[in-house]
Length: 77
Image (cartoon, rainbow, N blue to C red; front, side):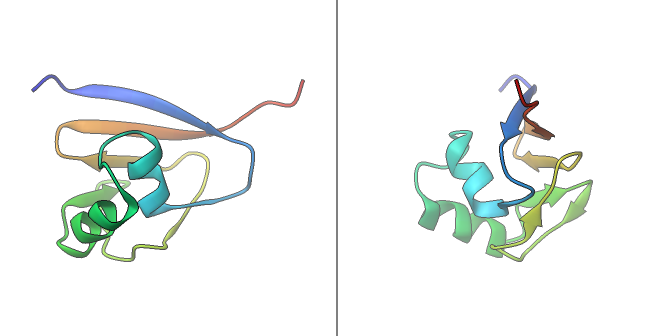
């Protein structure tokens, strides 16, 4: 599998960790994302995170398997 770095731009101050996995397509459902998190398969800023509703903020780096996503705040136009 190819390692990828995606960027997810959010309009809010935070987003729940499981939602990041679902929105980015790393998991096919919120339930699948919650299981992956509970099993310790997800890293937030290079540390294992097991809290499904962990509040993710701009600047956080999420890794699941070989995929990574950097959270950024969407700029107002």
